[in-house]
Length: 418
Image (cartoon, rainbow, N blue to C red; front, side, top):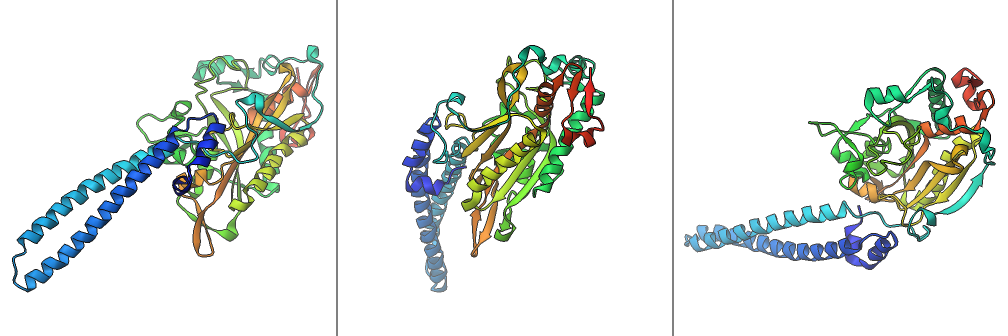
């Protein structure tokens, strides 16, 4: 959520920010007008309440003096009626303001490149040499038909669900264990969180109300399946005031993620790239405002560390203003090389949400006796299924798939043979 006081002081930078995101600027004009009307109503209400208090004192004085207090009581009643009407108008105004603010995206950081869509994203680094012998490489979904069971996934749950057997199930578990162990070794606290959260939690991180169509709602309950562990991890400190000395806080969590993929009906139908349910290790940070962009660089390197450790080629790109997520002020996408597709595919998005989520979820810290909003960051560290896909395609040979050395102890094997 944006800072209403900052918009009131100078709305123009916010209009320019929305233009850079290719978003309509009308909400800023609405916010300015609603705020002006609210303050006018509030001033009238406060003045009337002050006048009513004076009349109450006059009534007491008149009673003591034995005077007729009926006219004063009548006038007091008239003021009370008007105050009640104003309070209703103010409450409706607050609701309208909140509804607008909840649907306005975050402001891009000045370092974010201006652009229209993903074609304007800027590459910042590339690591490893992509495998180019395409004729010898099969896509992951053709390698182990007995172990990667799409038919039974459909039978159980419908399209975009998959059953994995034996060695592939162990490989998925090995990848997740390696990710968690690596992140814990580099300062993250592992957290086990619920896989369902309430509306308030999803509103706090920005998925609601705008993206309800991308989520799974539990019928007859105020519960939703999590689209990412970012939601429960960030909301661990909702409504809290943290100590300055406790920051930064760094959390990691392995969870299933549930997404309807409503806007991607025909995209990546085959294989594991775009599933309704998938495993992911998520990284979340709470930090001081002045350190958050340095923390974003470190967060991105933490995600990249997994790919480097596994020997997978990747590139990292900073997203342009037109391709950023709703809550983000700056985002890096880390993309792994997939030989069968002859391209890099996103395996992690690392974002600094500045104080946008903290305002929505009321997450603050105490400094010099005053409360300030923390900055929140999140990133995949990594998507487990896409990492498995990358391993199957990048480490293929004529007789099977070699398991990267860091996974062999977790896996209990060096290869998966055909």
